[in-house]
Length: 373
Image (cartoon, rainbow, N blue to C red; front, side, top):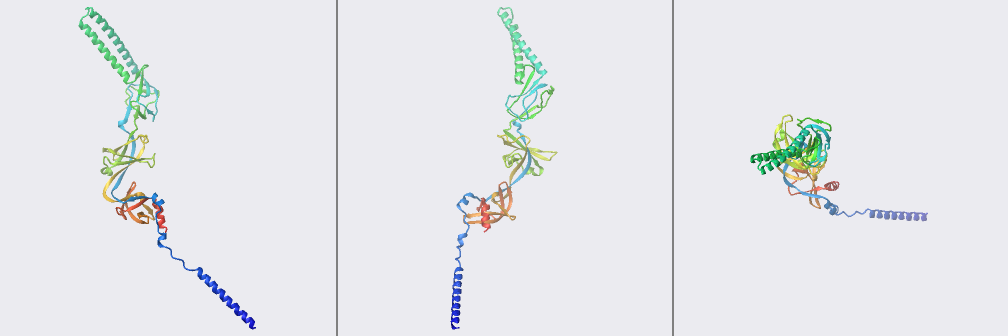
């Protein structure tokens, strides 16, 4: 019995020892960790990211506003030629189509005309009269040399030659200028190089002798007009020399820059609008007559406010914000109030001061990094 009691006591001491060792090991595994350095997790802009961002300084600028206008593209009237038929007759051939580019002197059409036939007869008569006058002068010169003719008769013969020569020269110039040719043909040629923008003639058509409308219109499109209509409410804002931005449906995102160079100081009674003109260079002929265009005219208000690139503004939860840059470790998210935006510029009513620097490119990555922490 005593032996069993000693064994029981020994087993109890062993269990207590094992429990003590287990507790010691547990306490050792749960020892508190050292607190992290507060600066270890501070945001710092890396060299790679710094090279990618764009920085802009807040500047005080006059607030710009705009007038939006509807417009159309038109040929430059100073670089345009309308071609009228000099004579009536039947159109034997038409050698160009609408939109074709033609060179100066190129044949546009051929007209067979009875009027040209009459002029041909007059040319033949003038040539014949010239020959007769020359022969008559030669005969009278011989008679005068033989003292068988008075000097007055010789002078009259010379005068007849001069009249015949003048008449023949006139007829030759008519044929040269108007491109009349044998066979009673009138050749219609291009007076300038350019594009055929109007064509009002077809083969086998008969043109009356009193036809007063142009059968072709040719325009040099290296320079074009933009004609815009200004409503009465905007007339006071429009001035000659105002910068203008022209855009079209054909070239989305492309802006053609020019300025107002002509104001037609009268209103169209039907539309109650005043027309203005913007002349644009068009070397690649991208702009075509009758294209629909949109014109934005910019002007300055009297107010001056801090201005930043519109690309610097971050819109999040109906709030306008910017990333203000001090150095690589000091970048703040700043809420601002936008007074007005136009083109690529935003004017700030509050939240920024002149001289502060904002991030205007790739700022969303920084914004997310700072505001998700």
